[in-house]
Length: 455
Ligand code: SAM
Ligand code: SF4
Ligand code: F3S
Image 1: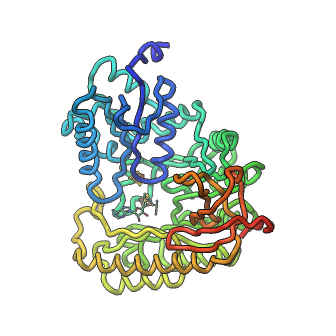
Image 2: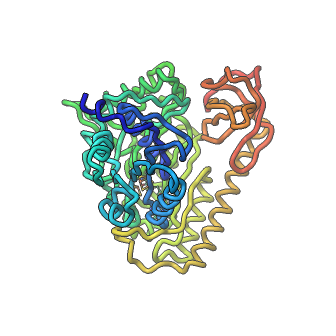
């Protein structure tokens, strides 16, 4: 009641801008589900907002500076208007906490990813006391317990569902263990209930999320649940068409998980399995805790189950001490696995990590290597897409394109497909004959005569 009474903070419109990974997208949706309880509506227009929330990412580059730059833009927009409540959330908020409030007085609230259950209280306190607020404790259990009581109102055909947060692996280049805290797996039933809510709202595909999604491990009385158990339980939900999970670590790619590919018809045949480098020397220096040989064993096992399975990956180029030979090993691995849809970035030293102060590879060399690897990865993508021309693929239709005419969907391998069709197709798996392609998308027509098939 007290919360509701304090609500009358003007128009109650929130503008949320999200940077970073899918987990941030999921979080932004859940933040919105939460602030709705204190009367906020969402707005797509900066100018209309009286609360501006920036959900930040700290993974690479000048993340912190980008945030201050963005706040600078907001300041300008609101120069002639009433100042909105400015909230910085996400991984930069967690890493910088008090510092942000000191450096940029325009920021009112700094809130870390494990404190979103406290966001309403924090906004209301700020509105009442006009004091700066900072919430950056790691309180994951309370967060998910709280969020599980608020309906997930996401109504997308393809919806995210966070099942695990944080990381205990401490790769030497990565900030995630510091910004998201230790590994935590949500209770099995909580996840299944949320999946059912999403399906009720129209989800046909669920993408399970976690910084280390395949490290999922939850013990309830005598039974231990792993990602494989969750996948099989989701498989039994009749209205759900497709299941995906991301991001996995090779170390946690256990046989029970691999074997789900034998049984499941809903688990999609694209495995996103970041390897970072093709050199064992670099993997060791990165503290990745696996070798290329171990990675390839996983590849072979999955290919043996289903030769149509494809892989995508993340690569870090120019990690300290990466020499030409190390880079060649990475190229060799790409040749062997034929990754599709991969991400590659030059190593970016992150404050507070083990690799932060290591001697950098010459910038020009790193850039050259990035160009070479991206050329190869893009070639793989183009060739793969070209090879699909003339074929009919099962496409889960997600929505209308901005032009209001064409429809957008995805293949089993996550490739975007654009085609002419009726809005009745949205939410259905439709057979689309591919007529044309480019690096990122396939274009096609509805093939009414085709019988649905799973890869
Ligand atoms: N947990 C996942 C794993 O183990 O691969 C990755 C999570 S991380 C959010 C996503 C990707 O960001 C990583 O796979 C890595 O390629 C990239 N990344 C992380 N730290 C980086 C850094 N300091 N410089 C460049 N890329 C980085
Ligand atoms: Fe970062 Fe490594 Fe953890 Fe992935 S496994 S989130 S790269 S520390
Ligand atoms: Fe970025 Fe945090 Fe995700 S650093 S990649 S938003 S976990």
